[in-house]
Structures are given as C-alpha cells and as structure tokens.
Length: 197
Image (cartoon, rainbow, N blue to C red; front, side, top):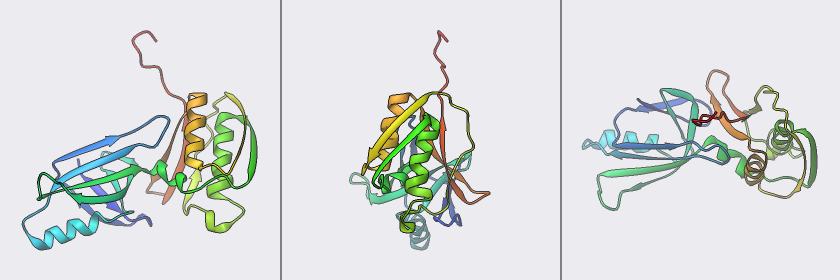
C-alpha cells in the first residue's frame, strides 16, 4: 500500500511508499485519526522532499481506499529514535469541527435530513459566505427513516454531529471524492455483524 499526498485543492503532491507503521482509525460516531511513523532517508534531498509532503493541512490518502483521507495536523521527530518522524492527523470528518451552529436552528424530519441540514446551513450554504467549507457537498439520500427533531444554537458543529450520531445510532463521515474534487458529508446506518444477527 502507498500513501498519496494531496493538497486541499486535490492536487497530487507526491507518494510515500516506504514507512515503518501506519495506524488508521475509523470511527462510527466521531472523527477518526491516524499516526504514521517513517524513517527519514539518509539523503538530505530526499528527506527535504518527504518533509515537504508532510506539511500541516496536506491530505494523506491510502492507495487501497481512495475515499478515505486524513488531514495532517503535525509532524515531529520521535523522542526515542531521532531518525523517525511521527505524523499525526484526523480524518476529513474533523473539517466540520471548524464551524459552529450560527444562531438558533431547528430541523425536523429523518435524522439523515436533520444532520445534513445542520451541515448545509453551517458549512455548505451558510448565511455568511466566509463560513463556507470549500468543495464540501452532501451525499445522495440513503433513505434512513429514523425520525428526529433537533434544536441547537452556537455549538461546535462537529460536536453536535457526534452527539446526534450517538443519540440516534447513526454513522457519519466526510469522504474524499478525487474524481469530482469534493469533500462529501455522508450519513449511514451500521450493519449488525455480530454472531447472533
């Protein structure tokens, strides 16, 4: 598996194909995270190239799962091995945590509709254009039928979506759509994979 590195304009910056370990944690109710450990090359030019790829806010995308991406939050030298760099990040889901519910809002319908409306009103088509998350769109309707009516004001949008997901047992994510150059907010129901299903 390779890690492709993109900037936020969906432009490929490079590929990382040698690394020590990768932890890629996907969550159902909340924002997932990742941690990448890689040994820096001995060649100074190669090291500088790798470090330029791992800049804050670039995106890591797994070659075997192109719809999943992580936003790089930081890179530090490993305290126990000075030749290893540790890169941390959060899944694209964390993007909506940069917004909050503007004023009092009430949405009624299915939980899918309610969650998507909070995202539309506060990150896609807000009343103040500077609050738009560029290239974010809503996924097609999945016809999730759980009824919901929610009122909220001035809350961190990411925390609100996490709370609604937990309350209604609904998963959510932000997908990386390279073909259309979009970030897709998606809501979905889990599947029972237990032995007694």
